[in-house]
Structure formats: C-alpha cells, structure tokens
Length: 176
View 1 (cartoon, one colour):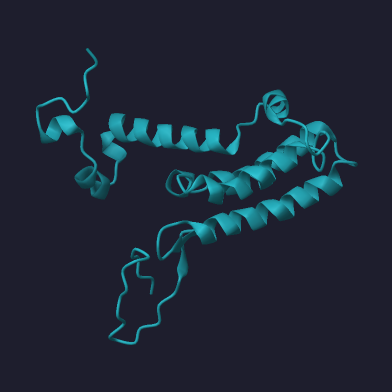
View 2 (cartoon, one colour; view 1 turned 135 degrees about the horizontal axis):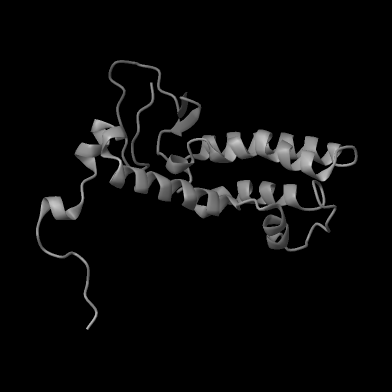
C-alpha cells in the first residue's frame, strides 16, 4: 500500500498495513510524496546502461545505426509517462539530462570532447533535448485535452475545466 502525503503530515497506521515508500504502477514509479525520485532513478539507471552499450558499439556501427539505437533504447525511457513525471524539480532531472548529453558527446556517437557544447550535436541529429521532449508531450496533452473531448477520461473532465465554464469574468491581468 502506498499512502501519498506531504512530508510534514504524519499518518498513523492503525490497521498495521505494510506501507511502502514507492510503488510501480503501469511502469511508472510513484513515491509517497509525488516527487518522482524512484522514477527518475530508474530512468537514469536504464540510460546509464544503454549509454555504456552505445559507447562500446560506436567503434563498430555506423552513425545511422547509432541514431536508431538511441531511438529504440534511450528515447522510450525518456518519453514514457513523461507528461506526469517530467515536471519534477529540475535538480532531480539533471541526472537524466546529463546522461542524454553524454550520449551525444565523446562516449557515444560523435567522439567529441567531454566538455564540448552539445547543442550542435542535437541539431545535427535532429534529436530533441529532454526538456524539449517534456514540453512537446505537455503541449500535445493540452492540445488533445482541449480539442478532442471525446477521448478525454471522465475523471479529468470533472477536474480540469476552462475558467470560462466556471465564471464569466476575465482572470487575466490586463496591461494598460
């Protein structure tokens, strides 16, 4: 059983039910404070292993195969469930960004120096950085939620509603 609570709130376990700090649900690790630490650690571990494999294969496989390997073995971990856990604290997500950058640099595809700037490599490969993948996923979710109401879960329809459905006054501050 997982009880989600704030760090400050202390809950008493009256029924002696075993509580866990995190659980895995549909491939996503949820922790008790919804800070996504176990999920980020899981993704980071998977990326570390795969970057190591790509590092060894770079001597034997051509550039296009390495890019395919990135999209088949790294990108799915970055992408899965990202609309939910991608908004975690930036300091927690830095590990993942570092692993993705490492894949672009010396130990992976380009044989670049370890301190070289990675933006040109992302542009050359036409690969999105982690924070841009998150922005894309969040934007797609918002667009689909707003424009395709037939596929939206009923739970979300009851929770997320436009301000215009709640009241008639403008909630945006007007610049004069």
